[in-house]
Amino acid sequence: MTTPDLVVLCCRPDRAAAEADPVTRDGLAALGGRPVQFVGARPGKEIDPALGVVRDARRRGPAAATPGTGAQPADGQPADGQPADGQPADGRPGEHRDATRDPAAGTGEGVPPAVADQPAGTPVLGRRPADRRVVVLGDDADLAAVVLRLLRADLLGSHQVGYVAGRRSPVTALHSLPIGAAAARLALDGEPDLVTLVRDDNGGVLVGRAELSPVDGPVYVDEHLLLRGRAPGLVVDPDQERGVEVTVLHRQVLGIGRRPRTRTGRAVQIASRVPMTVVSDGVPRSRPTDRWTLYRHTAPLRLVRGLLE
Image (cartoon, rainbow, N blue to C red; front, side):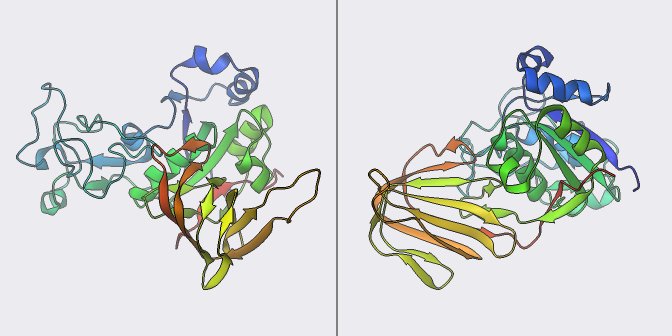
């Protein structure tokens, strides 16, 4: 196997915070001294340069501030910090932040001439290697945040993703991944596999599990009606064959009660008559919602999970 370019992102603020967890400390040690970037939990656009995305600082909109003046609109977002499409301002799932000056922006020198034809703030691919491997140390929410940046920059096809989790999680269970030092060795030397990537209609991605509760209303998996009335909750997992696996949870007392019902398909649409709490990859949505859609993305995620030789 050709050795890909390697980028290691630890989703903790610094090495001391990462090594406070023994399993994560073992994972760092197993990386064998390779450079590690400490990027904090659920990173956003600040990791774009590490992923191979550059931005044209010269093509900002008229309201953009000059370097050193503090906050400014970025990526075509309104001045109040909320993007026009309702997505988190910095691309981090599960939270909204004020738009700030893009740390990836430089002076604009050395930008290819073709960039001048792009709209303000358009992400532009820099050198695009045949393979670049991004190793993520963190939890499922951190992995989802990094995958979201790859998706938005159209880099899923050129980047492999290794995952070093500090504890068992829906992602490690779904893909039979180890944790700690064993996960680090696999992330460095394992083979990539094409796995299902799920998106939601709010611009996010799902890599492990989504939980919605309570639900009162129709739930459709593709054209099939899975639920018509009330249920305490709903669980959605990526499904390698179809796209999504949807399970309706029912109340049971001492094992007595309706059993969970499961169906797979390409997409699930939920319309509830009562507000639902949504938890996606362990991150609660900031506000309850009465509608939610999850669907299989057209391109897979290149996840490193193959057996070591």
